[in-house]
Image 1 (spheres, rainbow, N blue to C red):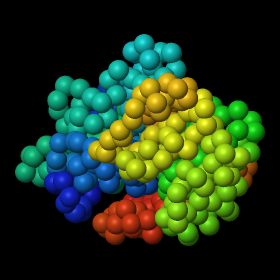
Image 2 (tube, one colour):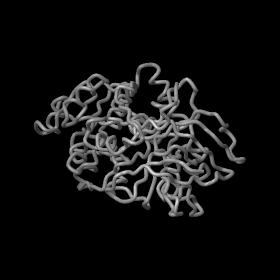
Image 3 (cartoon, helix red, strand yellow):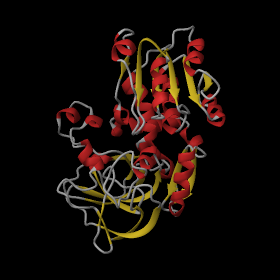
Image 4 (cartoon, one colour):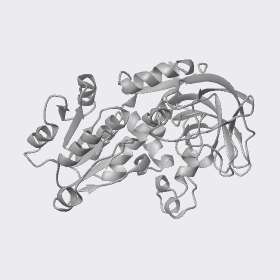
Length: 371
């Protein structure tokens, strides 16, 4: 079938709205009509080449929509279901079967190879040129094909214009704290970068009972938002030595936990240095930058840890309904962070996200949808 999508043809290119051909769904696939999609930092990282995928491609991995077709092998999804889409996982490797789908052995192939496992493509240009998909969902499109494991059925009372954003950035931030760091009640944490992921991590720290929650950024407007959402202390890292400021807040000891969402080498180093003995750091940004450390001096002597947490170590089918519940209870007010754009405004939305003027852009793909 013919669809419309935002096509990205090269690294550092602009998106172009084009007509594409969507393949016939297979027995294990689901066709979804998109209502909306968030724009995530991972989309921008892929656009500028910090993360790789074959071009041309349709990006987008925070989609929400309505199921139009269900393959015969799909068991728990039906036509008409309202769904949020997240990452893909196989469901049968050892990690998946022990509740760690974000560590799926086939994660790279399923989410960033650009094709189905057999090498065929979900999208093609009208001249037959193959187009890569992304996270097996490619939500910057009017329709897409995806897998059952990508889908989270949500109540039809949930606003699909909002909840798609829970599929990656907000999921990563909350899950990094709750599932990865697992802070103890009364502990301290510093969040470096107060974009969507950082603010989600900060709200998760509050939900988890951290008593000292330090938001670190160079933008005062974002720090003001962090204060509204639960930060106990604010550090403008452009005004002085950030490590000294954090240690002053924590009686000279440093924080128990730190999360870096910036991917900037110097900031990651500061996130490590700002922790106390036995502190744990989670660097979660998609970045091409490196971090130089002396493992003995900076890790062994102080018993510090650096952990990798992909997609918040979350099981989307459990964590996304949990996020919606937190939102309904007023504990995760992510709607305060969003701004809506039309699909045709994707380049402006992408720029606004990259320069920080919009924390979480949402593309409205079906403008006729009503909640």
